[in-house]
Length: 437
Ligand code: FRU
Image 1 (cartoon, rainbow, N blue to C red):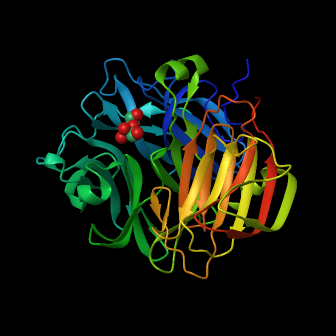
Image 2: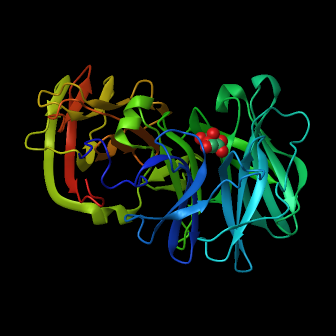
Image 3: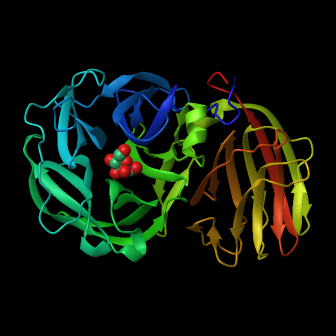
C-alpha cells in the first residue's frame, strides 16, 4: 500500500529509521552519511547509512558504511561524527557506544571502511564535564588537525565544546574548551557540534531540542559568539554542514517525525533528510538560509497570482491543489498581528499547518526575524506530503511535519490576523516526484 505521508522529493532511506546527517563533499559528489537503524523504524542499533547525490536533488542510497563491531568499542552503536580527507584516505570519526568513546575508521573510496586497530582513539573525557561526550567534528588548520567534541558543563549550566589537536589524525591531545555555552541561550549540552568559517567570521552549530547557530570570532582555539539564535523549530535537528565545490556551505538536518512509535512501526520508515540550506553571513552578522538553485530542477506545472487582498482571516487559493508543491509568496509590508500561509489545509481552510510571521513580536515560528518596515515578508515553502520546509526572507526557517487524516487537505490559504494584508504575488509549482510513491 502506498503511504500518503512518505515524502517524494526528500531523501529518506528505503526503509527503517534515520536520524542525524553527516554531510561530506568530495570530487563532485555530496555524501550524506546518517544515523540508521537498518532493522527497525525506531531509534537504536545505530549504524552509518550512506546516500549520495551529484545534483543535490536525486539521492542514491548506498550500502551501509559503518556497522557496530561485535566485541568492539562501538559494539552498541556507531553514533554521529564527521569525515575528512587526507593524502587520498578518508577518515571517519564517530562516537562508539557504550560509554561515548571516540573512534576512527578509514577508507579509500568512502564505501569500504576499516576500523582503526587502536580504537577507541579517545577513551576518556576530560575531568569536569558531564555524560554527553560525543559527535566529533574534525577540521584542518595550517599546522595541525583539530577536533571538537560535544559535551556539557555540570549541573546543566550549558554546553561545552571540547577542543582537541592532532598532528597525525590518530593521536589527539585535549586542549581546552573552544566554547562554553549558557543553558539560557543554547540549552544544556552541545550535541552534533559543527564549526566552520563563513564570510570572514566563524560559525558554531550545536543541537539540544533545536539546532542552534552562533556566529562570532575565532582566535587561538577559542570562539567568542556575537549572535545566537535557533536555526529552526524542534522538527529540524542535529544539523551539520559540508563545503562544496562551488564554495557553498550547505546545511542538512534531520527532520523528525511527529508520529507515535506504533505509527512509525506500521509505516516501516521514520526520519527524513532536510533539503539543503545554503548558509551566508548577513551584513548584520547573523546567519542567512536559502534553498540552493538546484532545487528548481524539480519544478513542474506553474501557477501565478498577483495583487491579492486578504481580509482578516484565511483566503484559500483558487485552483491550487497538491501535497507535493513549492510555493513562493511576496507580501506587502504590514504591521498586522500575523501574516503567512496555511498549507495542506482543507478546501475551507481548516486543519492546515500555519506558517506565520508576527511583525509585532518579530518572530517566524520559533525563530526571531526582524524585518525592516519597508520589507514585506517573502515566504518560500516546500511541501512534500508530511514534510513542510519554509524559508522567510532567506533569514529564518521553519520545518514542520503533518499527517492529515482527511484526503482533501491539499489546499493553500493566505492568512492575515488582525487586519487586511496585501499580497504582491504568489507562485506555485508542482514538484516532480523523485521516488516511487
Ligand atoms: C543527536 C544524537 C547524537 C548522537 C546520535 C545517536 O540526535 O543524540 O548526539 O550521536 O543522536 O543516534
